[in-house]
Image (cartoon, rainbow, N blue to C red; front, side, top):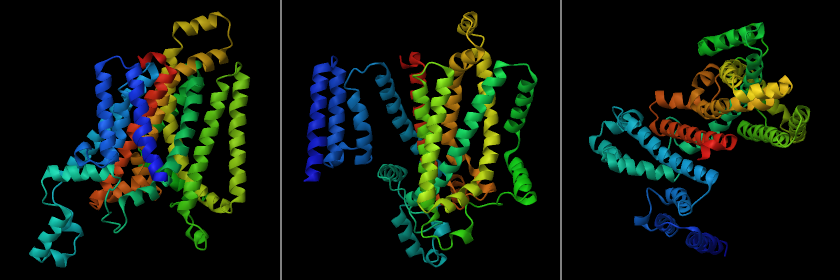
Length: 460
């Protein structure tokens, strides 16, 4: 009954509404063409008509809604989001294709590394295994299979961690990387934004020169060398933090749950705090005075923090979560001190350009307080490039954390990608690269939408 109801809703009612709206609102023949194509792709996937889907039915479910909305004449922001989403899907196909051909061009094949040597000594058995794994298939057959498996979310089995599926390994390592880099990226963004706007507003002073010098040093320093200094100072000499790893094994020996469960809950807590902060920013946007805006933001953050502390104090996992956070402190400290430098310099340079604009001069001529001009007028405009840098950087850290995760033995996506590449674990390496690409493309989409919301001129 439930399946029949779902098929009725998505197979009949929603497409029928689309046809009616298109006939009512559509004014061009191209609108009807796009609608017909989207319905053909959708029904081809829904009823598994082989010649009506591309790569796999799931890929049809991705592109059919996008083509569907090309059947309507949408207004400004909606049209912009539709076009950008279509571009992102096209770029995703291109990216997955490029990754496939890069690995296809690599010399040799994985059968020579991972098959039992006794099998390789038997030519007949070796040829059968190569045929089974499709090593001798033409490139276009390999490409079609690869794209079909990718859009079916079947990335294969890891060779180095056999028989684990690639998607299971990514699901295990991803929360660790997101938890680490989300915390460090947000902290460095807030620190860089606040410090950058302040030193730019009072440019030329001692604080400006000192902060700029410190920022340049941290921005250009050799990352492994800096992290070795951090480890030597805080772990070896002062013994304030653990040397490496993400848990204390002896503490978890009799734990009634796995570290992965705690990681996932910590990640959700981190996202909850981020949402609380964003709610505070949204509320503050409706208020008039600077004091009321700050009160709204801090009230939202404190309320979110109080709820989080109460949750961890009552769920029986609090001490284990503190152990993970204790191991997290040193990597976060390293990443924040390295990351805030770039954010601060970007914010400073953008602010120096903004404060020369005529509307800033007009605001000063009206007699507005300096902090109102700086925070309400100049900083909001200067935030656009920094927001883009933050969103893109947040996504690229999934693969860019190779150095950090290696130095601190933090088994996340970056270290997994490095190990898979050096071990020639092709399925796992492709899975990590492709997943990273998806996050980067999604981050580009978020950045574009934020730009369009903050600056309406971009929508047209």
